[in-house]
Length: 293
Image (cartoon, rainbow, N blue to C red; front, top):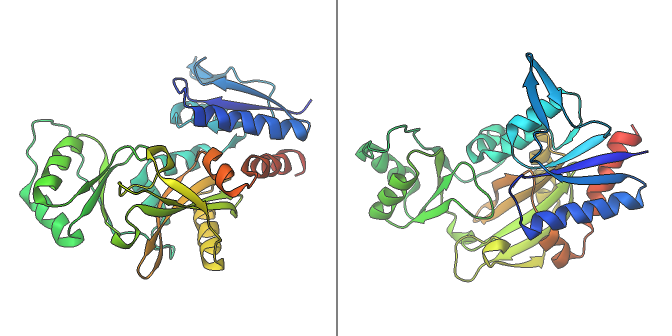
């Protein structure tokens, strides 16, 4: 029997996540593959007597819809094929790491500056850091925590006082500073790529927020991609070793800029807007990798 596993976050009850699993399970059923959907709360892998012990047995593959890097690392080391791979998930989960991986590859991105790592909540924000950031990026400036999704942990500072306040809030959390692309304020492009191929794209627009996430109230509309953007998404996917991803692109004055890459991007919204069957594309891709190799 052909059999696969979908692992979700142990605590998540998001409808978008549940929809992701249900859609994939349905599409795999059409291919004759039984899918078990489980939350990642049963301690799937542990270390005993110095060796990894996995409780995940009898599956041909696992679609890992979580960002728990310890479990993904151990499951992969136990021999289970993950979609996406452990490394790809880790590289996308940290926004600064994503930018570093894409640097020097001809991928245009907003100017990005890593924040200082601070271990002392009583430490003072350095005036020289404020001077440098506003001198390099100007205002407004975007501040992001390195970990976060659905638009969370993304802030905009309009002046020095606002920047200081945000830096104080995030100083003990990995974070970064990014150039604000005014031409794309409240608007971006979400592209879903499977195996490096663009399978759906929507333009997202928010009326009252510089962030355009659907989860924050943004509206989506189908978008026809140029060959240049298709090639850009293929380059990004391949550089990060992604089987599946959502790529967020900003509309810069001199062309598209890659903003973020999400290894577990929800596809319910984009399926509804574009009528593309993203779940089928992903299921067929995995089927080919596992059973037709």
